[in-house]
Image (cartoon, rainbow over all chains, first blue to last red):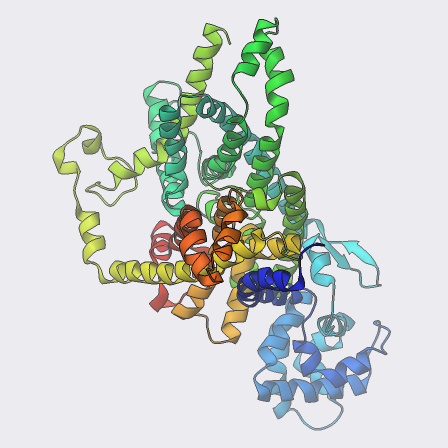
Length: 398
Length: 233
């Protein structure tokens, strides 16, 4: 940036600074802290430091020894008094199911237990306490910094003997869900291109007055509430809906065999394509508007058939618009939540829906953070591609 | 294109436009349904006057819950738009300046709320705003919606500024106008279309937003989309 004095540069930067600080505080920092949860969890480590220090020297097999039992008994009682026992127990439970209730009732029962070795007292409360797997679970949950949520997010886990193993088949859901999310985004992008290219061409080559009118038809749905449009697709596609009624009336489908078009993958694809189509049409239109109609006429007069002229003359000039629209649609599609949640049913759920589930229902924030981190990294890569192909500062809306 | 090809092409375009408009053509008549169902009744198809009614409009207009939701949507939308438009316009002017250092990086940060999947944004904001006591407050939602709206202002104003002739600013300065006067009298009138359309986008983002609201709003902050979500689910 040679040639600009420091003062001018400072003035330019000072115009950007307020928004940069605002976005930093209201958006970027919250996002960063959320991602931090995917690798950092101090709850168990803070509640059971002595137990964990002793377990660090244990070989993971066999009896951990009376010292560990005594430390754990003391620290569980303290956690119970401090009101954090529930949080500790649910984190251990996530590593090994069934331990939550064991841990929660242990301090209460310990109070009534006779003095003497804590190992006997704990074993008396629940035989799980003599199982090495219980102590391995506590040790795992006690890691302050961990990558295990990222392992879980790609259907892997750490084996009992160390090393990384695949999850049991019934627990392998996330890789498939990521694949489905990318597949849906790709299919929606392709559908948008297929539907958007002809109408962008029509609008770009129409007389000015008609072009304005047609463009308005594209923008009206764009400006209509997302929830309204999604709801409307339910009305259209449901079993007793408009589309099925028309098919039955036309005799194409028997009344008893109405098609399942919504609350499944079909519903997700149709509604998402509808919502994202304008994002494809607008960049295509803005590129096509700059291509003179004379070119195709010239190619035709030189003897090229339509298909040949289109492939050699027109299409190559629209590739920047195709790239811009496709990347934008794909980026928006992989993060979709509302539409799949409303019209997707079971088979149409995407990764965002599962992130919301772990945030709000299972409360497994570490895993939600890891799934979000992977999704966000994908968006980041696509954003860089978009910036390279289109240039973010040349993006246009409407 | 041959005559036949042209007919096929126009028919295909007509189908795409039908696809684009179908949901709107369906939902408007359905809003006059006299029955509380999500389908067209036989009476509606026969165009019986009795099958149509304004009961849902009356209900929305008279129901205290919906009226409060509308108030919340308008208040949160207006405040978020004002904040987003002011900050976004200023930033776009800085970004368009040839002397702006680190433009790519700055642009990446400022655009990020638009491309980040909403569920991730909403989850992060929920935790952070809760820790500051801002979850389940109007102020928290205003800040969150303003953050989501600013990229649209930055993009639309930047697009207008790319056609802006910098010599005009220099001329104004040469004629003795200070920076504020130059902004008010020269720059703002020229970029006004971008600012207005950015503000419209920012308002639309807030008015239509439901994911952040689902995570952050309490009973007192329910907006129209939140209320609709409860109805649709």
